[in-house]
Length: 250
Image (cartoon, rainbow, N blue to C red; front, side, top):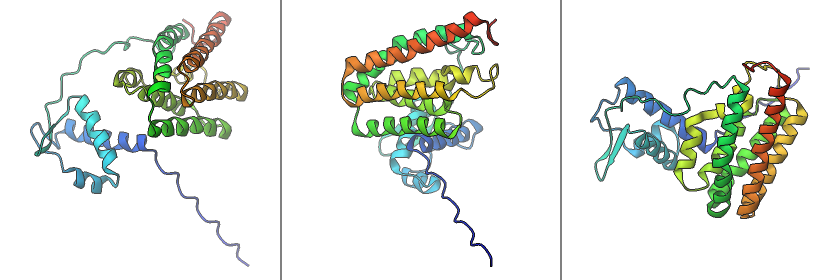
């Protein structure tokens, strides 16, 4: 007797953030490739919604991101038009050697100055939707860690969600400019290819949980202190590696 085939598990739905990035990246590529030359009108919001199979909110966030990049210009009553792509300029932080542990310590010090305040502001200003994104990102870090999967992207998404919950776009811009390489495990992965120990990931997850709890409780002082403890602990861990002369130290 044939054994019934097991039903295929449906793929997990993409997060709102992932959908926004997908739409943004596609439109970004089309504008740069000339599919939408300068002055050309992009399809209507309704058409983009149908083309990408996403909500109007996703389209609006993607267009807002393109606008901040200087690639499109919304015109009242007329639509969204492509602009001449701005001339690339050298951005700060591009000379960081992410493979050098000493550089990661320097960046962790800078992140401490920025992200502690971000956590405090998120505790004050976060919206229910932003709380949901923070919680979802936290759960994804824990899920990936428990499954033995890489946690770097989920870790970055959590820090970015907290920065965005300040409702000051500059905090999110700062983290986005640096990208996921601001997470030391990503930056050092080539030098130390072995997966992070389970105990280490459990420690990171616990530190994240304390930060998120403080934000959800609206306790700005506790959120500030929890983020500081998290980033200071990271500095201490990587200074210990530096002192031990691990691979990657120049």
